[in-house]
Image: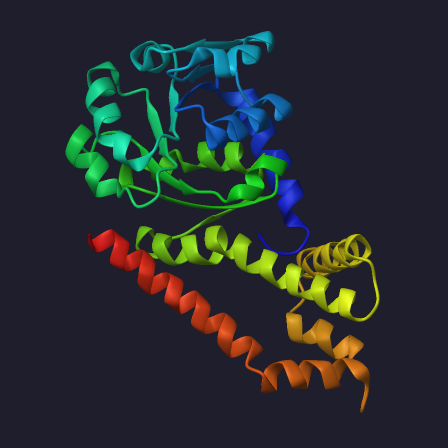
Length: 286
């Protein structure tokens, strides 16, 4: 979502679904990711009822303090009392979960998977192709409501993908992509968090070498990175346009940029992305 449209679209999605349908949601597998999604749903009041399932109920007992939130060990109970099912279990557990709940599914259910590497085709083989199935690929910034979440769906899910957009736009920003691009999206968005963290860390180390305390330098690096991203998001500008605004002939900025490029900055970043992409495809083949 380019420019300043993200917040407007997010608000519109939430309002539409609050007014038009009941959001009876179950999150199957309430670990870190599942609870981050639950946090966004509660914060944005984007649900009518919310079931959280987990083997260890003690770990999520405080969630019962919220209105219309129930916790359970019984995945079938959660499914039967909900219309939208969000799966956030470990990939190795997912086949068993689908087998467990498939007889509890009806034509009212919308299935949203946040399981890395688990294809829609594989879910359809287990459940049949009549259910709306949506794959989501958020990143760890979902815990602070800033996730870049990629979405794709089967043909049945095309009319229901706006439900997933409403949920995940409350936790950041969404983009719809083809399922064949999900592996690459994992590299750019999920692994990408680590790549950007390393860039911020390197900028911090450079600041320390120039005389700043580590805490000062990291704060400067973090908020400069935030400002750079915000400029692009809010103005719908291009990186090179913004670079041109801060580079002057024979100045320090262009001198630093050229030295970074001589040392292979852009090339190494691109090669790192490609290496990660090759690795994730290798893992998928195993």
